[in-house]
Image 1 (cartoon, rainbow, N blue to C red):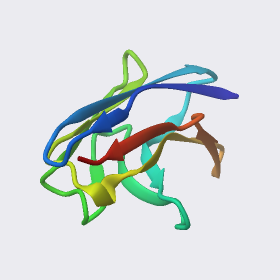
Image 2: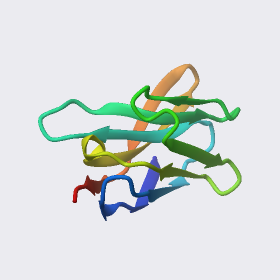
Image 3: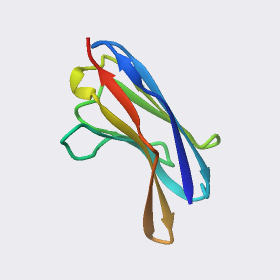
Image 4: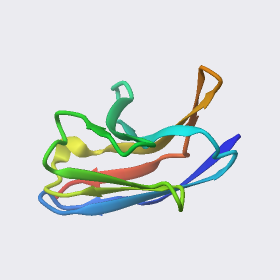
Length: 119
């Protein structure tokens, strides 16, 4: 099992910034990707950013240039710096980790943290 604990989030005005953090513990060996997904009310959960163990990061088009994800393989953490926030960024943000057991991927999720962008 992999346990993910998130921190950060909250209420911010449009154009503001927020930082989310996530720490992984447990069976962290062979975690391949770590990153963030989000789910807005009435919508499906979607990728925000995910980073491989090799350091390659994939961003959703909607956040490119505004969000920066950083992963620390030694501390087993992943942070998401969100700048120039927009109301449409409002969602519950989930930390995600994918571990490979042999060739089988296993997904783990944090409990989620609310981000609200509103004036």
